Length: 253
Image 1 (cartoon, rainbow, N blue to C red):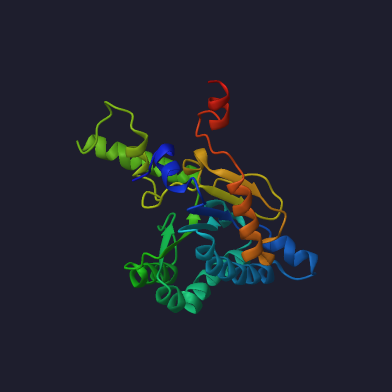
Image 2 (spheres, rainbow, N blue to C red):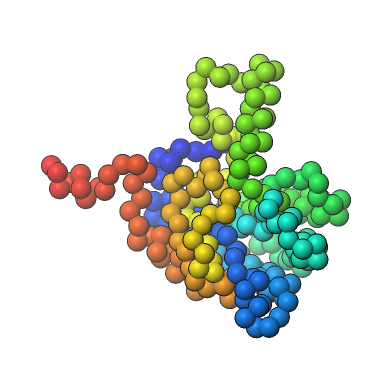
């Protein structure tokens, strides 16, 4: 179930327990080198491997990455096919290591409409790592924040109609339990690479009190140093969750 900002604060005030990343810049990275966009996507897979390996050493327990959005279907069919293939190749090449190192894989996003081979890969990865708890890798695939909220509202409405839920009290934590991210804590830090400064429909509900860090590095060049720098920036922030600076409280006494 989703947790309140205060609950998140109690567990993450000294570090970024849950980091979410919008992995942006693959296409521009390739274009600058005179290469097809698909080459950038392949290089991005290696960046993901580096980042997943580094995250636990930096105190991260949950890592959520934006792999494929509901809007990405509008890209050329060849690029969509390449992105689908990269999910398969990543899981096939790295699943044994993830399982061995205690990583649990979660896939969030719409599953209807995905090809059967993609569904099989998703289900296999989740089943094979379901007993792991050292680190959680959450991949947003065929995911959109608006779509997730809308579908959560539909599930909630159906439960109300069936008498399994009540509309007497507005309960944000209860509604959050209908989201695809219900199993994870709220993100402490959301990173976007490539210099762009927007969320692009990523974790819209969950981002309410997340710290945002935008980095100019293109995703294929990402790795431990860039992640460490983002977490250092996060630790320099004063997270007030709608309250006031603790120093201001002391000064007013």
